[in-house]
Length: 209
Image 1 (cartoon, helix red, strand yellow):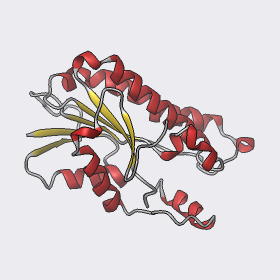
Image 2 (spheres, helix red, strand yellow):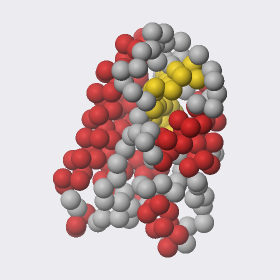
Image 3 (cartoon, rainbow, N blue to C red):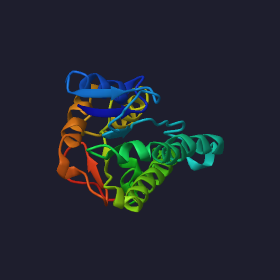
């Protein structure tokens, strides 16, 4: 039986992912930290995250919001990895899945400079955290992947979708089920996981850091 722990599973992509995973009777999905996993945790899915000022300019920046985004999107991930390292290390799969964002790409930031300033900072820090942590624990056999789940109509993603629509964006705007479908294709593909941690888009080529 393959075990998963999904953070941020009360709504949106996290909830959709849990609903998809539990359809397979061979999967054990843990939503409570104290759930007993005697054989270790196969997949830690870090999906929790917040965005407090998606369309705010630097002139109107709220630094308390930035601090909160860094704490919940990045610092909590460091604590989570440390807390679950012993459980992950004794599992068979030893895989870490982190939901990132296109807005975290430093190289691609020139293509979307008007949105997600603080969110992009926090998610870029999350990417660095995930990559450095996994590389630093390569002796444990832990591998990971970063995933951009697409522009998704969730509480957090809908304002982004509306912004893109207003500026004439013609790319995909996904439902939760569509995003989860693409995420599962990545998570279920062992070649997507590595010690150096790839940055995967929900479909298409890998994203640049």
